[in-house]
Length: 410
Figure: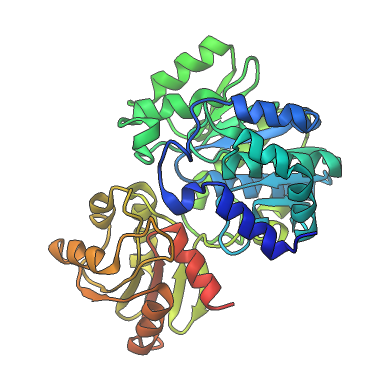
């Protein structure tokens, strides 16, 4: 029997991981055939629980955690699948907010390793199979399933949803999803199912007709979250951008009749998202002196929202520990950042990371001044040395920068 560490080592060595390598044909599948073959081998666990299925460019992770927390507070047994993880692989798969036990990962891989090899599954396909098998085995009442990328061809798109949702649309993963917001919306709307309520976050002139057309084609009732009553609840998710995600979660809960959730349970659930689900990296206040914020925003839409809140914070000078991945539109992301800050450019410890010196040079060309550091911890340490207690410190630019930051302070 392998140890958990050996099992993870095998997985990462044998199966390509999109978050480490970026986009390649090996890491992004062109259809769901292998996923379906694996589901059949597993005895179709995806048919043994209903699901809330959540896609979107930004906000789908937070919305998924909100949904799970509210459903848990209503007394349901809830499975939650999200990606990517920040510190531990088992963050991706939770039952009642508790991460899947490492021994479950070991047992699953040991049992199914021959099939994993023969099907040549991607890392993500394997993870989805493990999650759905775990949910079926635990006899969850309902699962909340976050789409990995896109929707139409995403491995999670084999679930049987009782409601689907698309949070926001922005330019991201253009190499696979399309170069326009309308094209990306078309891919994400691929999770819509016949006669299943479909909730979309916001109306906009580029994407509204796409969602309306696809919903009509599959006869899915279309609901706009922005039309949902604007009831905001105190939450332990402190980012101002979470208001849109609250509306999305509320609209998805209201759109389906199978799992009623009272207003009291919703209020408790939204107040205890972090406590109930362990969500990290969303406007996470790490310390007060200096005020230190970790946030996974990594594209223009997300960064504009976080920068508005950051710049509104009272305090002294602003210090920004920043790293990005090079397969993103880095220049557009940098354009969202304030010139009035000291930057600590760094690279997360993954091959996709833009080298710190390259990011520094690009930032300098856009008026962002600062030094380059070999890794996130070195950049954070330097920022702490330079910052006064009343200053503000932000760590972000990439999910993987936040992951490295969290691991550096474990």
